[in-house]
Length: 171
Ligand code: IMP
Image: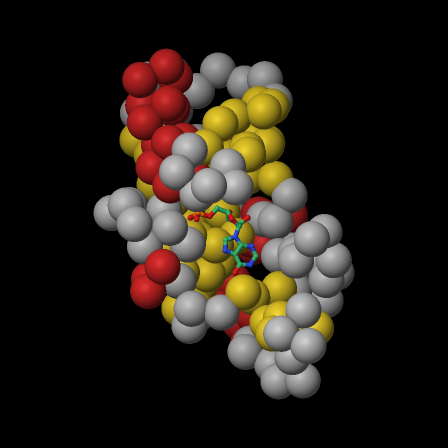
């Protein structure tokens, strides 16, 4: 696979959209303590930009997950410590593709951590690939059914550091 020459979303477009989401989150959670629950590693740039634009009392949890290669299972590898019971949780995800990873996480958090509420902020949404119906409350952009990279998203651990979003395609 090689990097495409085109760009899906520029650095400027991403910055503006993240700002809009941060403003909406700040309004929606006004007066509440918000726990951002970021899924490693792809959400790191989104998390870093989003959290600095949210004007609320924000806490942070980092979760590393494994989406199985067969695309049918997910598992949690690591969770940083913080009590989520009774807290308002916003999951920060890079992309919702099949929805399997998010569906698994939502169920685990709801059952085991008893938060007051859980919502999802996903930078990218790839609806054509969806297998499970999962809620996406804050969506950056919708992308076509391509393998997208950049701004945290990787292909075989490459391209995470691109400041824009593009895709990889066959050589
Ligand atoms: P899921 O298919 O919704 O479970 O997606 C799980 C994870 O796969 C996402 O959080 C991403 O880390 C990764 N992923 C899915 N689609 C893409 C893509 O197009 N580019 C890069 N990573 C992806």
